[in-house]
Amino acid sequence: MLFLDSSDPDEITDIFSWGVVSGVTTNPLIIAREAGDVDLEERIKKVIAVSSGHVSVELTTETESEMLEEALGYYAWDKKRICVKVPFSEVGLKVLHQLVGRGIATNVTCMMSFNQMYLASLAGATYVSLFSGRVRDMGYDPREIIGETRAILDREDLPSKIIVGSIRHMMDVNEALIEGAHIVTVPPPILRKMLWNPRTESTISEFNDAWKNRKK
Ligand code: E4P
Image (cartoon, rainbow, N blue to C red):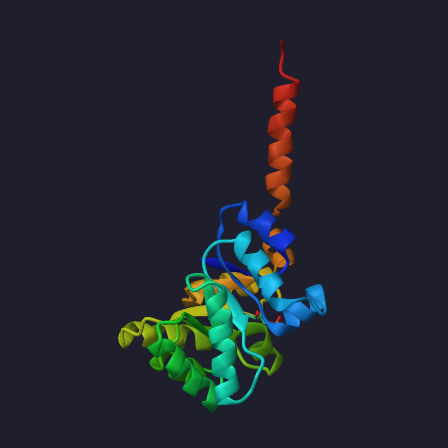
């Protein structure tokens, strides 16, 4: 499955009309880059209105009580559609445990290793997010982490779904799916590149030209 890694309502509207995307992920960096000092609630409600499935919204506070309060605030915006994105840490796990207990959808984020992915899955996260591009930046191969995480989720019958994010190239999407990611969250420019193949375009032109120039 594919999610869209964006907070841009126009892009989200357009790409959801293709019928290939099942959810949206945002993070503070994406929102700051795309919209600057925007009203977060307004922005996320616009995203919800033009999409379907879970919309992940990330916590930006750092203590357990603040994070819990922030999470409950986001959840109240739309109890079915909001997925609280919890940055991975010891405190994050504690917050996650409480959100899971309340039946709130969660996406544990910023994870770079098998160990972190396993802990977040054991704690009951709805989604566990591995940052493929950032793992590669450190000189490691994300494919092994994806494959190993998928194997343990299946072996222990853990219900978390693997999201692979931090996608920089089309090949990252293909590799993540082949290794066993349930979902890849893709930035709009990379999703648009997935449409394109020169041989497809030339074949369609060849067919259409033949039709236009057929003997009458
Ligand atoms: C995933 O949920 C994140 O929003 C995203 O993919 C982060 O990736 P990046 O900041 O490395 O691009």
